[in-house]
Image: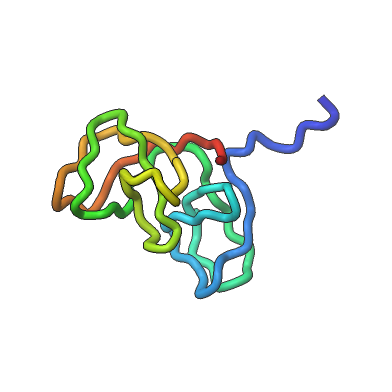
Length: 111
């Protein structure tokens, strides 16, 4: 195919205000990804849009295996609350109340 560009598993975006650390989640418009490297504000950063990642979560939220996981772009963490948040994937391990991390399989889609 002459028009094929790339698989799309990694997408380049501009680092947000304040920069970004490697492993941090970033919602760029409607596209969510995990930063592959640390970059200062405005510099290009590669975002992984698929795969399984450990990401910060709302401590009080509980997730069963396979539960939908949403990204709160303001708090910069995962939540079980759909309202005003972006669906980023599903939990691939249960995470209980008090846990700071959730293991998420990114859906590679956008909303």
